[in-house]
Image 1 (tube, rainbow, N blue to C red):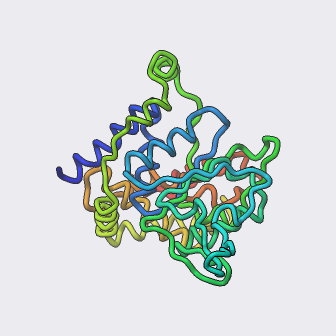
Image 2 (cartoon, one colour; image 1 turned 120 degrees about the vertical axis):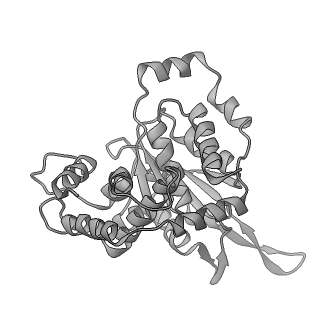
Length: 305
């Protein structure tokens, strides 16, 4: 099966579970193909957790879910060393973070201390416990869901944590036709149990290598730099994108191009992924009157091609 057919099958299967959200599903697949972590932010009940489950099933990865709560401790994620009387030594008991996909459900209901425990894991793909560094499985993805900040019992993620997510998406309410399918169709949880894995870990690694090999021409790089410079101008945002964020934009655009069946990046690819890739990293200027996503789109229009 060629790459285009394989990717079409991935998207098709996910769209049977998450109906009416083709653009968001495509963004999620692009994020994982680019090797990034994914943040799904929306009100409860619109399918955030279902989407995360569907992604892990479809990508054929070992899955672990943690419900983040106010009393969750860092050791509950990474694991603990417990003294074994029989061997008279400490034995390490790994936590749920030792999985290829960690679903951090309602991540902003945990305390900032526990949220920050994910930083090393997300960036370095390893954790340090009792002074010993332990590598995490490969591949390793964090798919986090969070509720809007104005809901009770939530703690806003710090900027350093948000920067570790390649993309942030919102699902929103379904349209009328999609909601009818949800009301009249099979239970989503039952559908998840029957989803086949369409990839192996090795095939996913090969696809990620294909993403790296997607060509970005010099004029395309010029365009990306123009957009990055616009974020730093002070007209649109209080502070601009970092070089690391710029690299993330290009990586996500390459994944978008691969999904479109191309071996080169087009400006359309950059425009398609830019709001999801950068809006959570920046704060609009005070008098903009727009949210971060709308501000990014206005900036794209102003920069032009």
